[in-house]
Image 1 (tube, rainbow, N blue to C red):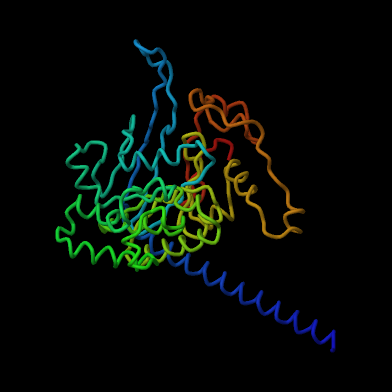
Image 2: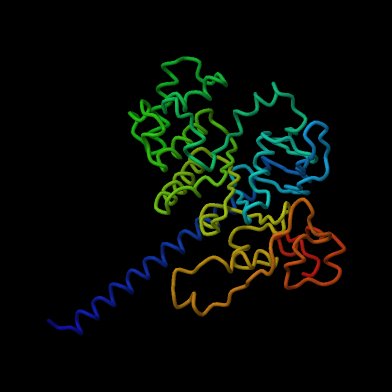
Length: 365
């Protein structure tokens, strides 16, 4: 056997595969840029203005009194355009899930406004909010605890249709359940199974089918893939992407996996200790992070190449995350920030647009 010829052939195949992978990646980036340009021209579907959620801390058994507040969200503002996917990222405890729960009205905000198609959700009574819930749905993090173990899959998916009376006829509901199962990549015969008879990825597909059952406009994905295996995560992400394009859905995608966020989202908002510190289009944020916390987050993402990973410089954020009961004065990140100056502990930084569409809360930049 000619060893040199075999080696050359192998190198040629490797180079060919690398070129093909680069072409696929370039094509994906171009498709995302086109999608970003299209979404940028759309109107706002969701607008959050100066949202605050402070949970009271009480002491005493019989005569309890409020002694402090956990400032889970402290002045968050952002918009989500129709057809857009906004990623909301940050470390555990920063207020991502609480933000989503406030939009869903599962938590009643302490202050601020949440506008959906111009309607302030905070001002709605129970009956009015029930009518609007059909348009706002959620995919929960745990695909098992979010499904009733005593109900069959078909009953779980059909229940929102019964509650909102979108399909009053039983035969029509059953037909739509089968259509939704097929749409989400499941066998329609799964309608007669119970949640414990399915895998984690299959259960999450059921959660997606349930969210789609009432034809919503806006879906909050609360860590929708974090409990799944990596191979299953890719399938669910591709499914969410296909459904968004097919039904013109709008997502708030709450996650901590930055690589997944980059694949799916049009814009990304970075949260730290109840505040948004940076907001920009996806490629702009990943290629040009401005806030020190965002830079540290992106630097922590591992590179799947041992040589590159070994050589690159890591930004280690000093200290621990402060308590939301007693957050630092001024900029909440200043005790851990490498750029901090004396003024950072005295003044709350303004959320400014430093580049077109790139907003940052930092007084030093």
